[in-house]
Length: 626
View 1 (tube, rainbow, N blue to C red):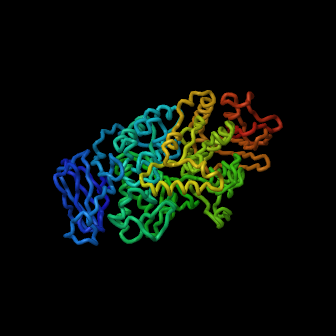
View 2: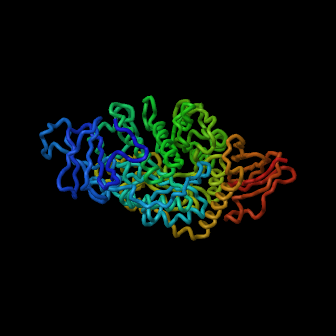
View 3: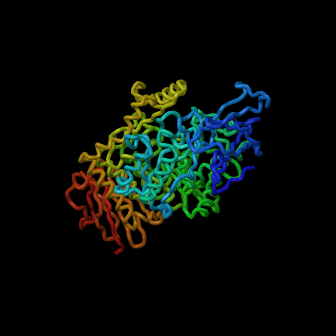
């Protein structure tokens, strides 16, 4: 069986030091395989290498040349080489598809880049302040190069890590990225793999970490010919998006190696700092060693080799800390996970209608629980799921949980893609942000959130298969039939849907946006510098819900330092009695005129121990033991 080499990529096409190209393809369904390309004088018949692999070493192929494979299915006679018996396919491990899906791959050498980030050692996960962005809509140009022009802006904001939504090659030039078809290839319309290396290098030289969103639970439908090579998929399981990846059925060893190689490549050859693993609950693996645990093991070995630490963050909808527990505690060892339940409880507290999965949440009561326990449902009956759900997240530090008030899913999966800035007041926007950054967890913001972007972020595609386009259109209309007229559903294939989702950078100069941006900067600076807010210590967290007033009192400590956070989600001014034991000093008031709010006075606790808090606002106090 092929062995994974930590120090270099084995599958696909790799250039060696002597200038020759080594090609390794897994195609157990084939009876014969030939390497072909526009620059090759003739097809190159590949040799069997065992366990379904085919191999060749060739001098004629150079960087930038096109190449692909002719494969003869095992069911055909080996002597039958007619056009009807063979298939021409792109390399499943191609790094660059210059002309998009359906064309030959473009030979690319990831080692042919002059890195200048040798002194970069990464940052600790507790110091991550994440900015999630979509390459195509973050800038007018919509490519990786244009992101570099915004790095100084992100640093001034206080961001320490950018998270790129998936870059794997997808059909056309407009897509969220979760329908990527070639997991190793960087989207051509974004600039391709060299542009990604250039961006990561620039980020590291400015002190920014880079997280890449990857999809290991399915492969997109259009241009997906993986099944012609071997058993990449299994019928044992189903996913909401297509065939399940074969991680534990017959022939799965090579499939597992494929995705392990993918993770290692991003870390080793592109210097990515962390991977966000999309919807890991849809990864089905009942083998003795779960694929996620195996990816973690190889990632750890690579870290020892390079001297850099790499993170694996999961999107997880199971409230099961087995995914983030260490191996010696029976876990898979992932470094952290997104916490959707914090978001759901926060949005209900802010007035979100209790429909769909929001129906499981009661607002401030569940938000207070999430501050203390991370998971809201940790062994209780869930009405929405109609079953008992979750286990307690005990022994997991705060830095293992990523929280947010909005993200690409929670915005883009609304039918109209409305951002929070168009759904709630400006005062509530500041409260939501404060609720995230005062948590004992890692904060994430979605692009444009920091200045109150008004343009929507809608679901968009650019498929070329008319039947698939029609199916997606009908699916979107059916999904929202109970809430909107079908004619209101934006056409995901229409380029206007995509163009209308781009950030409006001109609007940032307006006074209201400037005030909100200044507030975010102050909030992030406080999160980074205050010894309690930056510690993410779950051991000293007490959250008290006041449902009648729709308020929360959050107390956190670290050593002798303490903070008290008062949050008023109601539309009325409230009077609260904070706990005693500290000499409190107000260090942030979201309702201050400094941030465009109505308050002109400094908030201090009165002689009788009562403090008034404006509607839809947050007060942060700092104190020491007395």
